[in-house]
Image (cartoon, rainbow, N blue to C red; front, side, top):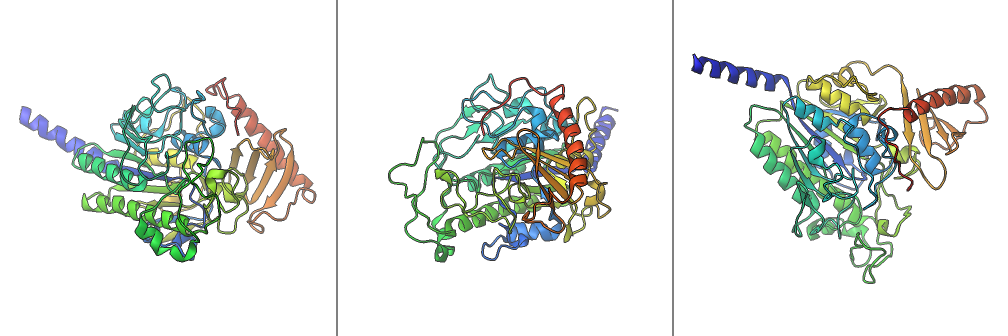
Length: 468
């Protein structure tokens, strides 16, 4: 009898696992809409991500939840527009800003449903990965956490600011793309034979500045580099004297994206080797637009991210700051080689992943993301809806709101200042504010209604950020 009960329990566990896919959510840092070969980059070689796109669905109108890292990650993991969570901008070190325990992350939701969960890579949802007073990844649903917070110090080579489950580590020899791929593969190997499914949130540091690359990758793109390669380190008030703040061309940036692609290719190959290609939902996206050659900070020099011709860059609510690459692969579910022009956002991944995993969406809070399951299965796009972005910026263009093909930009005083028809003007060069008064009024009214609901959200914390 005991043996029969044990076998029955094992069959139930295996059946439940088969019905619930594993999930690998890859969220890269500052990768631009045009930075991959499958999105039209003419030089950088990204064969592994190009292959992932050929095996799944590639989005051409996917939007990050924000144009900066912390709010984008807050939106991704909660399915809630970042201003609801109190994460308005990037979180400075020691500021005491963090994602509150009252928020329910995708990791916590899946963990409650029996998933093994891990964060490997960038967190940046508090101001100190070693402070137990601030909610840490382990407090917000992750069984295991290995990585860094805001940016790699001194660069992505031999980082000194990595933590494992709240404990700061000594200098980790290697490049973060390789270190995180190594850790991800080891974690997958550890959990590949388990009867419970897994959720891996893999958040590489690349191509966020400051960057370094293995010499052989720099050599591949040396034709696009001028002068000696001198890294510009992070974690200091200003550039060190030996750092050459001179434009050296895009070669190092191209090499960094290519190296990132190679390391992600190792992780995807590990899924195949471990027999998890067919039962794993893989989601790939960037957290915000790139640092282009229009540098705004000293530590951005020699970044050359590509927006694919879209206006703006990281930290701006124009398309170049928020429209980024996204790819979804789930064999036998998502038709291979498909491209969708349907607008979608990182908030939708919370809802879509939970639904694929058979986990009910929380009903005790507002969830802004919608289920993309029908679209991902090759069906119709979600019904027309609104998209809301909010991000403080010195230029005062703090809000953007889209319905259909029309996008309204509003200032800090909530006044409409620009209107664009993205179907006819995707590069946002023709401001239609003066010629479309009725449309401006309708969009503005819808924005104010949505914004009021965000401000009144019962989970929105009292302490809010003031930095840009």
